[in-house]
Length: 207
Image (cartoon, rainbow, N blue to C red; front, top):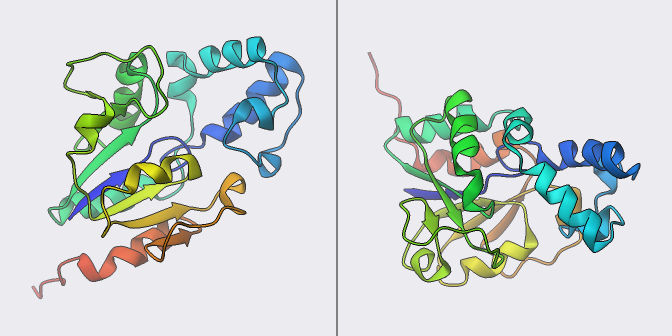
């Protein structure tokens, strides 16, 4: 089994941290449950200049390393790896964040997952030709059986995999979105994601 897992708001609580950061930087008080759009400029009511400053600060190494793990993420992913499945973390973070993102994974017990920075949104700070930076043409050569994703804007990146099962991690900004097809299923937490993949786990052996 090959599984794609998004980083922010699937593995870690980025939006909760961003909610606090918006207050600290601009006195924009938008609680996590009121973040209704994946477009954070719109969600937090920022102008373009403020948004640029906000994203720079939110991707600084010390901030990235401070994000809390989404409960159960590392436990479930390591269960998959122990069963022989391949797990790739594919993030829209710019390639400049690779080192702190890799350090965060290692610190949270996910040393055996692959990490790729995919140029999902046409950002300028991607490194071409590196082992961890993917352009879309490279990504579209990859195939997966399952994907864990929270962003409706990312759903279009699954069109090349018609049999892919997409487990949508429940977040305020995706609760009103319409899923593209029946392969999409809303999951409230990592335990519900784990239950979706239990039939693919090998049976326990009797000692």
